[in-house]
Image 1 (spheres, one colour):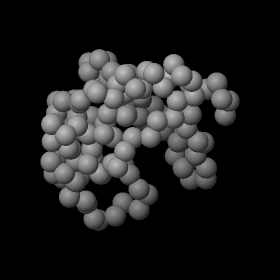
Image 2 (tube, rainbow, N blue to C red):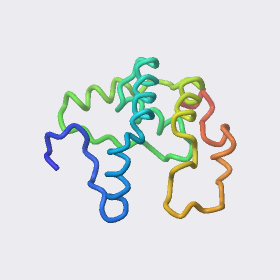
Image 3 (cartoon, one colour):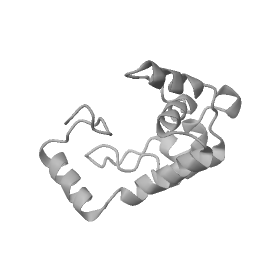
Image 4 (cartoon, rainbow, N blue to C red):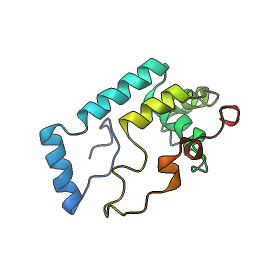
Length: 128
C-alpha cells in the first residue's frame, strides 16, 4: 500500500482478506462510516481528535498514542487534547459501534461487564 494512501491500515490476510473484500463489495460498514463521520462533524471534531479523546475518555485505555508524521499533524492533535466528549457523543458512538460487538473472531460467550455497563466504559466527565 502506498504511503500516500489516505488510510494507513495494514492489509488483511487469509480469511480476513476474503471477509474484507466481501464487505467492500456489498457495502458493509459504509453506513457505519457515514454515521461516524456525521457524529464527528456534529461534535465539531476531526477523526484523529475523536480517536484520541475517545481513548482518553475510556478507563480501559491507558493512554492515547499519537503518531504524527509532520509538525502540522502534531500541532493539530495537541490542540485537541483538552477536548472532552460529552455523554451524548459517546452514546452516539455506542449506537454506531456497540461495545463488545464485532470484536474477536471466536464469538466467545463471555461478555465483559464494560460492554453492558456504560459507567465501566467511561471515565467520569470531570476526569476526561
